[in-house]
Each structure stands twice: as structure tokens, then as C-alpha cells.
Amino acid sequence: MGKQAAEQAGVLVINDSPVARAVIIAVVQAAPDFRLVGQAASGLVGVEQAARLRPDLVLLDMHMPDINGVEVTRRVLALRPTRILICTATIRRNTGYLFDALKAGALDYCRTPSIDARPGERIGREALLVAGRGLLGKMRTVLGLPLRAAAGAAEPARAGGERGASAPAPAPGGEARPTRIVGIGCSTGGPSALATLLAALPRTLAAPVLVSQHIEAEFTPGLADWLARESERPVSVAESGAVPAAGHVYLARGGRSNLLLRPGWRLAYEPSGAAVYYPNINRMLASLAEVAGSAACGVVLTGLGDDGADGMAALAQVGAKLLVQDPASAAVDGMPGAVLRRKLLGYGHGLVDLARLIGAWAGSRP
Image (cartoon, rainbow, N blue to C red; front, side):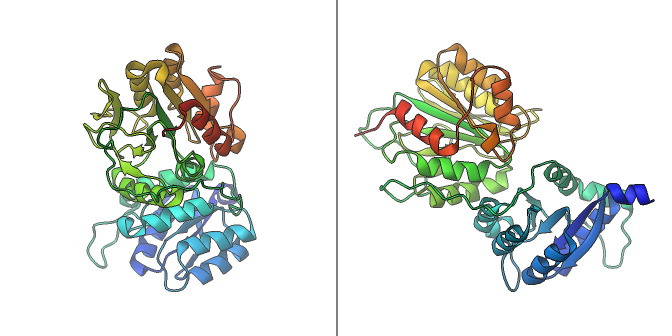
């Protein structure tokens, strides 16, 4: 018993909804590798308990009666490095807060599990484990990530220019099609890295930017809105048939589909099938290699696993530009490390340096 308890990760649940809190706690207590160390119905109490109980993992809601989850994240991480997983039931209403919390240092996010049961009905352990499979998987993943302190890095200076917007951005009438194109792939830690990188890109970038971020479909519109706000440049969810315009960012639709570039430089989607990672970065980068060849630039940022390494190899074969985030600066070094282990590049770069190198390669539009 003592050995098992010593191996269990202590979890603090901060959520003002009694129903959601009860469901999360039931799922946590059903799993043999976790133990509940505390619960809080408000942000301020949650911050105090995080300081006093020193949990291995905090499961944090966004909307609470006093301070929201973004402020809780900031205050908890200012006290000590802590692994924080955002767990929320209201996705559309919370997307801006959610990505702000990730920027502040939270590690990942998931939807609060739901259980279909009548009032007073007893739910068995196996049913709880099934209902909480997604949450428990995220919890185990986050526990394997590096501890995070408060996010205190200064934002890069932003060049002057038009305010970003998440509306679809077709190529302006009469404007020549761009002659170069950039493809960026990222996973865990990606939203914050993207915000920094996109904000640092030149306002007059002469190439469109395609982005495949591992994400579920319901989070994609909110991420596009948030990236537009953070980077102050046009960001939209990519639409099939669109011809990408210079200076615009096209975010792959989340879920089981892959964003591709097709002949004629038109965007398209394909089903991701049984791919482990989606939207699949390898497939997007391979399509850039096939259609744009040496006029493409592939960029791999933070993320778990090795998605992107095969796509970068395809780009290398056609003489495309390759760039990768320095693993030491990445929230998770798996994906950039996989590219470097393939010896496709000798070293990586910080996010602001990546933006400078992309700008120098792509050039400026008039």
C-alpha cells in the first residue's frame, strides 16, 4: 500500500461546478496511478491549495467566480513550477482564455469528461475509466513533460502593419501568386510557440504560411482567432480550394483530416485515416515538396513524437529550405529532436531567430 501511494501522482482539482468537479474527482480516484490531494471551488482557494499541497498536477477550469483560470495559472506558477492541465466543459466560450492560459505556462488542455447516469446511480470503476480515458491520457502525458515556471519571456517586438483578423483571406484581386510558401508543424506547446513566431515575422512577408497543429476540430476556430489577436496578422482556418495569399496564415482544420497543397497551389484536405498524429504534419510537408519543391520552407516546432521528420526528409530531397526549433527552447523536444536525429539539419533556432530566417528566405512583398 505504501509503495503504491508513493508512486501515485497527487492531483488538485480547481473547478467551480459541483457536477464537473465530482465527475473529475471520480475519474481521478478510479485510476490506480493518481490520488486526489485537494479540490477547490474558486480560483483564489485553488491558488492557496496549490501552494500548500504542492500537487504533482493541477486540473484547472477556466471560468470561476473570483479569478479566471488564466490568472490562477499565473499565480500558481509564480509560486513554484507546477504542471497544469486545463480541463474545461465549455470549449467555445473558453477558447481565448484557454490559449492565454497555455501562453502563461499551462501545459495542455482537454474537455471535462461527461458521464451519462441518472441522479443517485452508482457508476462502476470501469465505466469511470472509460468515460475518463481522454482526460487520464492527457494527465499521463502532461506528467511526462518538463515542469513549467511562470512564462516570463518578453514578447518580440511587432512590426507595424494591419491588425490581424480570422476572416478567410483570399488572394487580393490582381496580385500575383506567391512564388514561395512556408509550412509549419507543431504539437504540444505549439499554440504559444506559434504566437511568438508569427508575431515576429515581417509584416511584408512575401509567402503564405500553412500551419498544421495537432488539435481537435472544436478547438481550431478559437485557436485561429487567438493567433490573429496575438500575432496581429491575418489568420484563418484553411478552406479547400483556396489559393493561399502572401502574408496570410492558414491553420489546418483540426480533427482527422490533413491539410495539403495541391497543383495550382490550391489548398485541400484528405482524411487522416489511421494516422496517430493529426492533422498530419508529414503529409502537409510532403505535399509542399511535391507541389512547390525548392520554393517551400518546412519548419518543425515543439511537440511530442516524431511527426514532421518524414515530411522534412521529403523537402530535403527537393532542395527546400529546412528550419527547426532548438529543442532546448521547445516546451517539448520530441518533434524538433526527431528532425535533428535524422541529420536533416545540424542545429535548431529560437523562435524569434526562426522568424528572422523565414523572413530572409521568403523576401518581402511591395
